[in-house]
Amino acid sequence: MRKVYILGAMACIFAACKPSVNINKPVAGGTTPGGLPVYYTNYMAIGSATTAGAADGTLYLTGQDNSYPQRLFEQFSTVSGNEAAKGPFIQPWLQSDEGYPTLKLVMGTILDTCAGTSSLGPVTFNGTVNSLNGNFYTSPANNGQINNIAVPALRVADYNVAGYAALNPLAGRFYYNAAGTPMDELSHTINNLYPTFFTFWLGEYDVLGYALAGGQGDGNISGPYQAVPLFGTFYNKSDITPLSVFETLYDSALHLAWSIGSSGALINIPDYTTAPFFTTIPANGLYLTRQTEADSLTAFWQAQFPNILFKIGYNYFIIKDNAGHTRQAVPGELILLSTPMANITCHGWGSYVAIPEAYVLTTDEIQFIRAATTAYNDFIYQESVKYHLAYVDMNSYLNTVATGIAYNGIKYSAAYVSGGAYSLDGITFTPRGYSLVANEILTSINSYYHSTIPLTNANLYNGILFP
Image 1 (cartoon, helix red, strand yellow):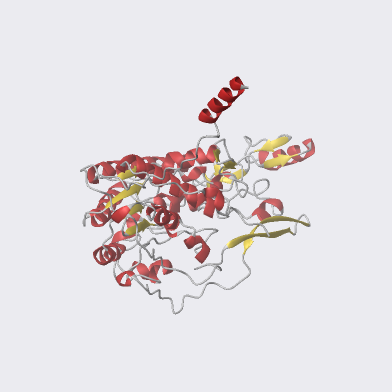
Image 2 (tube, rainbow, N blue to C red):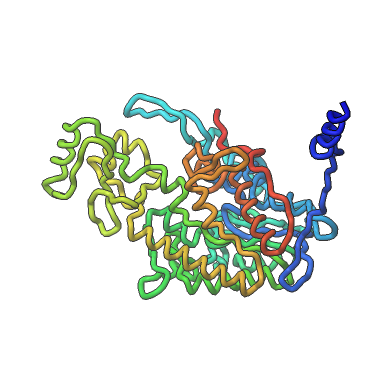
């Protein structure tokens, strides 16, 4: 019995018999490269659609409340001592969930009148566009200022456009000076809000506008064929912003944000060609089950286009490229999610009728997009070094998400609807996706400033909601 007792006592020492002790370490806010404490006291978010919390093709209240800046503020609030974020975190709140300036997308029943079938998919919400109470937003706190000045579709190229608020209603609803520029708005906010920490995610739409338009603009970022302003200093929304313009205005805006001594993080630009908007409809999505179908289509095109051939199985769609050529798509080319599916199933798009160029990204257009993304990101990294700010490589992270990641037992990917990360517009994110984005930003902040800010639990938030 004595031996049994001794063995039992030893088991208690090394296993469950020892007392349970939980040691809660203070959440450290970290230090700047100069050794000073990082203060999250007054956090400010600067950016475009993803920073505003846009989702499902528009902006709405729940999207704002689940935006990555909202998640960051919540985590910044856990920092110990005087460095913690202090609320409230004010956003230019909408009043409800219908959406503004358009209705949001929701999952619903899609009727295929051609085939006489129905399926579950994204449809426009049956409601009324959000009321803006006179189209103005008034902040109830923070000296009349807001902490999130992001505007969906705002480009770096727009930062010196006077009267921008009249061109974009999502800016007009809260800009203090409708005749001013976004740079004026940034200066006004910085010098009234006095942020101690900021995130800066600008530049997405300087290349994304071109991609969303199917390359129907100027894609060169330098040289004689680069884009020129449509009027004044305003560039066509479907142009890629020239690199020199991007660099000048990005640096000016960043200098303003940094000028009062704030710490912060710069977020680079994703390669959006990996997002569901560009990957859901495969370029070889024309499936033929019978040889007679293949022969009929081949005969239809052969007289004018002898290189077009069809076979049983998957075939590349017939497209129109920007050079005006009708041809079959080639591997790597992309069909946009905005392509009207009824035109494919009922009206012969991609088979007997070429898919118009506005719904296609050809290989050369994809190269323009990726060249601009790379050049912009190289500059953003240089800016992070210049201003001693954290650099968030969101491009690499979202490329990883595109191929699939596991987070706390849940798989996420860029698969449309089922992937969990992207909202129904195929560009912006679900609440879960925004939480993942916030975690990537927090990871970079912790690494750069040697802070220990905890990450969010993305699985606590919604993905795509089904009826």
